[in-house]
Image (tube, rainbow, N blue to C red; front, side, top):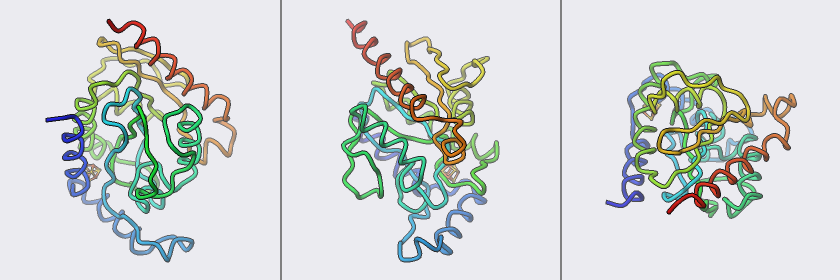
Length: 230
Ligand code: SF4
């Protein structure tokens, strides 16, 4: 079976998952009450699977669907301020067909990049519980197995980074920092970046130059890896 078929089936499984009652209830409630600005829109309200190029060399790992972002639009890191930064950067570096991402049906195409999350349901206050992260981690583990061409995994924020390292059974992972770079035994490079959340970008903790630099770093590692390949 191709990676694409496997990823498609996995995403179908994720989208109907009900293993975390607290999160499923929260996502449905948010989808019914809605934010005032989106009252005329139909919210997705379900778990949100990963998406992108199944042959990707760059994997972007976010934290969780935003209650009024991905939980509304049905696509990860889409429809909120984090998405504005992410897709502008992906577009500038040649991974996305468009600089903005609005909805799962907006026609945007990712090339050589795949986006997934540490957890696939929006948690209250953006804070998943450890047992919820652990449960959803098995999906991430499967996704990473299907993404066989990955060269760089970019973890956005410390929670995504620690989830990734746990799923990869990486003992004693280096402390998270912006620009952190470490390699797995198979050569896959793990990069860490501050999450482009509104909290980080509005306060100046994450500035555009430091953000785009991470993508340049990712691209350089992908190119080096291609040069080394037989
Ligand atoms: S967070 Fe993950 S494991 Fe929990 S219900 Fe959502 S998709 Fe399922």
